[in-house]
Length: 288
Image 1 (cartoon, rainbow, N blue to C red):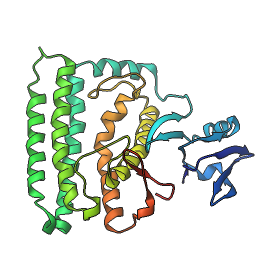
Image 2 (cartoon, rainbow, N blue to C red):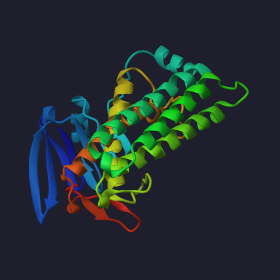
Image 3 (cartoon, one colour):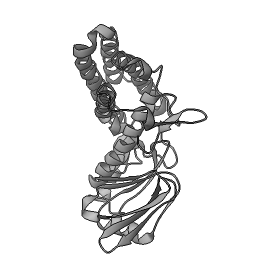
Image 4 (cartoon, helix red, strand yellow):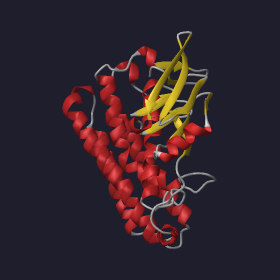
């Protein structure tokens, strides 16, 4: 299970092999204890306190502690043991700086597009009366072909940054058509114009941002266990303290979050009290 704490002023400490938790709810202090072997991740948002004992207990039990802002992870505490050997990471760095590496990683983008097409086809079966799903499907197919053609005929005179920017540009346009198709399957009060983050401008994006936020640390953890350096990416731009490889690899798995969010909405599991209105957007409430 995930231990998610969004309530302002929470307190987490260690009590033998258990996490001791205090938080305020409806004007009362609620206390509870949870065994460490029942928790997979600790997810913290807003202002609260976690003791060094609780952090040590999490590390000993291989439990990542994830810090959120605007439903997206800003930091993660986890053990410092990286799998495999330094040779793996040296080869990763060398491969990431080659045309072959860029071409290899572009297949992750193609897989993302394949997943998008597959999901839109599924939506079409149940929501065909709500919109023209064929148009976004065909547009994504065209951009997938454009990406294949581009990566098969890369101009070696271009800088790697120019090549990567072109790939990201193709992916970005395809995704716009994809989300246009998804919007057809949503009820009126959840339809949206475009993707928005930090904060979300609408309810759908608030849900999506949270789902993606939960997915990032899962991908990062798997990369570390595999012996890869999450900061050495292939497609997305390098930046200070940016886990670029996570941004690359996560593309293939975003569709699973999309499916979940659309299913939650259409099965009417999402309620008005699951959202908070901000000055410049919308976020999930504690219940959300």
